[in-house]
Image 1 (cartoon, chains in turn purple, green):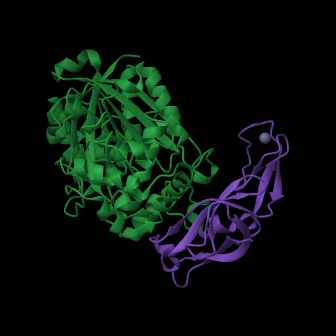
Image 2 (spheres, rainbow over the protein chains, first blue to last red):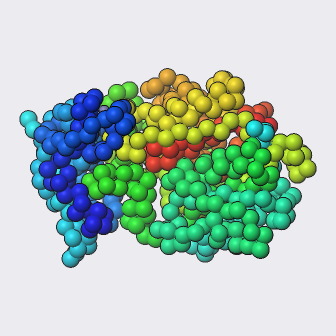
Image 3 (tube, protein in one colour):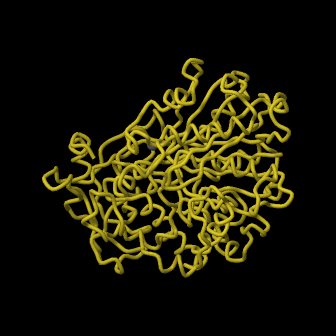
Length: 130
Length: 387
Ligand SMILES: [Zn+2]
């Protein structure tokens, strides 16, 4: 991930800011600037997501790219946010703890680093919310 | 549109080819295809080259021109175009060649695919392959390509009660077929135990659930059907060519365990060929991971959702079953040089339809299908071929 590409997404990554199409009511995270349903008739506004949701599916990544290598094994999941959209993120819990249907809530965490002295990337991870 | 036929096909052996360069790989496959069609280079009107990521694997871009040049065709100035759709690059380059000939714009067209993946370390290739998914919203979170397919497997298992043994049987079958294919990267048979005892890559997928990192190239030559007999006694007709797309990110799919792009492309291909599933003698599907083969069989409509694991365990998809799947050994055992895979699938079906598949030969094969997926299902190409 390049530094520029990271900085321009900070509001979304730090605060789960996505969008909503007020024409049809659909929520989008990651944000979309174009509604697939309403097309040009869609009026898109910013929406800050609560970040709470439910695990739809999951895995434990044990072999990762260089950037994530020292964090393995880590739990990766697709979370369905309560507003509707789904997002891919890490769940901070033991590998055997994650389950489909598990409730999660967001936490602000370090996601990865570019080498030893490189940029540190922060963003949203999820923790169990019982 | 005019009818199109494959008049020649060639493929390198697949594997870790450290002594061969990217350009030599392609030239080898291209020469084999030209020899097969009894063609000389001057007769080629155009080329399409499927390649996912030479820019990252060998730090070379501008692949269309490079390939034409090292095929000895620079002075002919033919149009040569790179086609990229991640692991579906080969399938799409074949489709582009078919469209070019069907349209009447070109006559003799080479469709090729090539990838040299072992010139970088494993971590770097894992990261490059992750680019087939959504880099900003999947890759950023630590999603690897096996990780994404593993999440398909978890969701699928939860809903359809797939057993770990049924999943492993996909790899066992494909290694059995690969052991009968002289170009395959892995030519050893394995057992369910081999799969179950291999290391976990992304739960529940283990090392033997995953296709390998591979170097290889494949090329086929297409021509108008009414000219095909000038070059070969056994032209293979292309009776359907379909392509579909879907969301780039897995999390945005309508259904995590169904590849809607496969459903759409498969449906279009059957309509175009005016055929039903019973007419297909064998199919090469995109088994980058064992779970992907099960999804492919179902999403192409060969059986209801959730049934492919059972069919595989019962031997229906084996060489001697009712629907042989991945007679080449698939991506799993034959190897998966990403940009070349879609063309290798066509190469396998051409061999089968000509009765040249040796110990893998399906008796009386007349109609075969290929299914090539990019990413986790954001691009799919499906072709049907008939002898
Ligand atoms: Zn809308």
